[in-house]
Length: 585
Image (cartoon, rainbow, N blue to C red; front, side):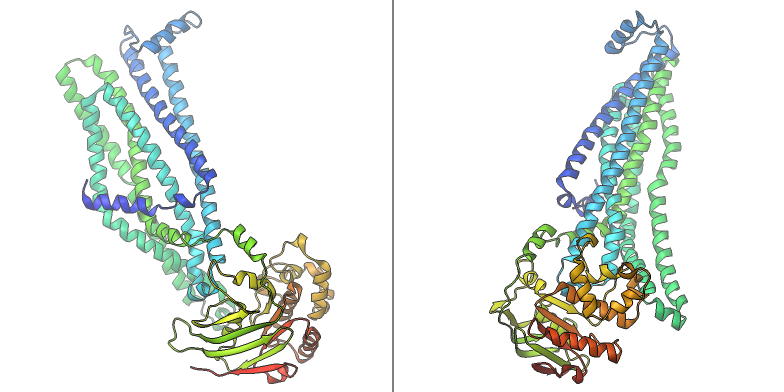
């Protein structure tokens, strides 16, 4: 085999490195499917061996049934049914043909079904991999890439799994049919099959580079298409105001059209050889049959022979076409699968282990200490925070103030254990926060209640947004009502038709900015951690609501440790300590 083509085959199959990410249950199902595939190959042998005697008797009714097993069955049935030889052989052939078709249908169904379930498992593992990645990973990576991997590239993996099974199934059936046809006539079978395989081999050589280019371009366009959708819908308010719909529509049109044209080319490349081979195969079969007839000089014996070979080739052509089409699908999906495998390599610990680890809560009875903390982002050579020392006593209230870009939000991300400083350490009661899969930051998170600047609101009810991440049936109603009262949300609940069950729309579209912030505050109060962090939490509130919430916070003083980030010094009057950060930009 040509070395370039061999390497291409190896690239395709090595890219399909998903076996270790498939569950044992699915592997057992694939094992059962493999047994069915072998049975399918055997059924093809029986189907082919039964057509030759049928055609022999059809051409010459005086012919005898040469196969010993079929002859014994025929003799046995004759005493009960009295079927003539032609009818008997027709029934035998149809039975084997029907059985073969039913097995192939079952394989087709199981192939699609098992591939879909494997796709679901890979999708869950990929999404889990993203969800359990460190916060810094999400800061540095584009969400459109993640979405395209989960939504679209998983589909590529399913197609590839299906293609691998199709190749195995088709190869076994091809070997079964070929060995049977060899037994019927080695000259015609070998010559015809060799010409077909040579045609596909040359075609694969010609298209090798083209398929590689298609694979890389397709992987890129999938991500670009997802990004154009995400940005177009994510900034819809500004798009409508600025009347720039056409700009985003043009971007989507280009990416979507390019992707669909590439898919169309792939489908054409995969399907077109079949129609050429149907003509060439018949022509070659007829020519070789005529040459064979001239050599043996027996017109009568050529009929069953030609019919058997023609039927066998009619079964072989779709099988070879299936192998070729599956290879094209694998080639065009290769880069998408490589992207997926790269993500799955970092799946890390299972969700069950992580949840178990999170139940071990870090002790916090004395203080949080930051020792010589320095931090900079990867795209900025300057430290946004440099050589910072800070002690936060339990039960105290710390105020953080500073201009935009001074590192206020970065500092609280470090305190919460979301991002790791390049220098220095964060300690809780003398225990250093350790990052990574084997770290203890997950044991620190349960202690923290956080109200960010931008409150995430899901398209659910008010109570589900407050009791965030908790099943509706598991919500503590007493704790929920207390959080609603302290966050000044009771008037909203009273004035809505559905109360706590009111749906707030996508991203809280049916809420005002102040209502969203109060839901964020209620969410933090419902969680009830020992460390309450408030990051510009009053920016969208009116003066009256702001004053009321400040009173609630004052009442929490000494019960929990509070960190308030604000640009308003007036909000920090009751703090035990205030630090001001200066911008290093």
